Amino acid sequence: MKVVLSMKPKLTSEERDRLVLDLCEKVLEIEQRLIPMGKHVFGKVPASVELASLLRAVAGFDRPELKIRSLPDVICEALDLPSYPELVRQSRSHPDRMAQRLRVESLLEESIDCLLAAQANAAATASQWLSRTASVPSESVLPVFELLHRIRIQLMSNSELDSLARALRGEYLLPGPGADIVQNPAILPTGRNTHAINPTAIPSELAMRRAQPLTDSLIQRHLEASGRYPRSIAMVLWGIDNIKKEGEAVAQVLWLLGVKPRRDSLNRVTDVEVIPLDRLGRPRIDVVMTVSGIFRDLFPPTMALLDRAVRQVAALPEPEELNFVRRHVSRRMSEASCTFDEAAVRVFSNAAGNYGTNVNFMVLDSQWEESHELGRLFLKRKCFAYGRDSQGRSFEGREARRLLERALGEVEVTYQNIDSTEVGIVDVDHYFEYLGGLTKAAEAAAGARPAVYLADSLSPSARVRTLEETVRLEARTKMLNPKWYEAMLRHGFSGVAEIEHQLTNTFGWSATAAAVDNWIYDAAAETFVMDDEMLRRLRSLNPHSVHALVNRLLEASGRGLWSARPEIQEKLQETVAGLEDMLEGVSA
Ligand code: BEZ
Ligand code: MG
Image (cartoon, rainbow, N blue to C red):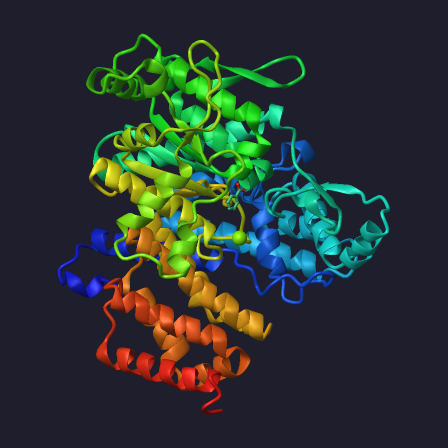
């Protein structure tokens, strides 16, 4: 990591402390990030699960349904410190708070090591250790250690193949929820019949509670960067993350608009209730929603709810500087001679029966000249409006490209949630096809590239990062991290393919959002191509993927997305020529 201490020779001691704390915070962020260690092999107990890190992440959450409190919070309380999220926040500017935070984190780590080392009565042993070492009341932490112990045992058994055989015989499989272990440890044991959630119940109360601080952080982050509230945010809504998190992204939309769900006696969300401006304490933010085809199919009642919420907010008799939805709708109506019903459309998806943006395919196949073509393809695929007009008539899936372009014309921020430790923004091509495609479309419509943010609600102190920060974090923790790529390489052929996917998906963020630093490509080339021994290993495991990786690097440089040093360029050219000869059978 580059350190900038040398750039300004005369630092005051406060400035130096600040730089050191910033650096410390970045190193901790990288160190504590959970990464998949290799791929899941069906039917096998994971060989290299980073068990201790996983359990630390699980222990970080309150789980009221299990009467469990966040372990770092309980430790903080016993040591008479602020809550853990507050301690983390303060540690960014106070060295003594950083020292206290490190102490809490080391107690957390050691207590989990103690649980893992115990031969018998693991949960009680760990609780007693924490009680002796930090005066934490052992009965307050016993339930969390019992949960961690249960997860450990469940991870060590695997009946997936048996379940598959039973399913093929048409036998009954026990159902289980679909989520990420950290969010919902009840997904264990694996090998069950995964079920989703009741679409009429989302967003759940829990999702509303968790969405509020996240939405506040998003707004605050933009306020600090730009000096004003974002007036309009374009947000991606996927089905899978809303299943895993009981509609937390939906809840974020409602908070941004300043409304909350109204429920009937069966806990069905039937309508929204407006939160008065004085209670909201900030303007209502306009939200343009890009909804995946999967979300559209899974959550029809939620699609209707979101549309209704926007219309209700647009019609509120409030000052336009405090209600940006109303501001934009009235502006559209006066400038563009359109009706209220047209001006208030905010829920967009694919045409009925269609899925995806295809922006990923265009990038993967190098089928673009100018990056604006990617935004245009996104618009074409995702401009179908969903909702009802003032008379209650549905316009389900009507093509409305101009309405989407106009709504995007006000957008200052694009945004999406990362919902799982298992799949990040460069593991698959779907994040850049959606958030990247949306960003490119908004850039063309608004005349300036929006700020792009991702929320990572996997850590209890909800974090919002810019796209650029997220790309850096993912590159450092995965593609460029020997722990990650060595774990992948143990899978042989498919591991090399995973490395190539990481690079290609990183490239997708250059193509759609110019969000990749030069050093990331430099470091990828140095790690996988300039190092002869590594190149030899990759070629022997999977020459096709190495060929694709080297070609993608050449494409990044050829398109001006990466300024490669001449010796790297030369080595890439030479490597690709050698690989082509090898693949065509000219040489071994
Ligand atoms: C989803 O809606 O869950 C989804 C959509 C596109 C890609 C991946 C997931
Ligand atoms: Mg896919």
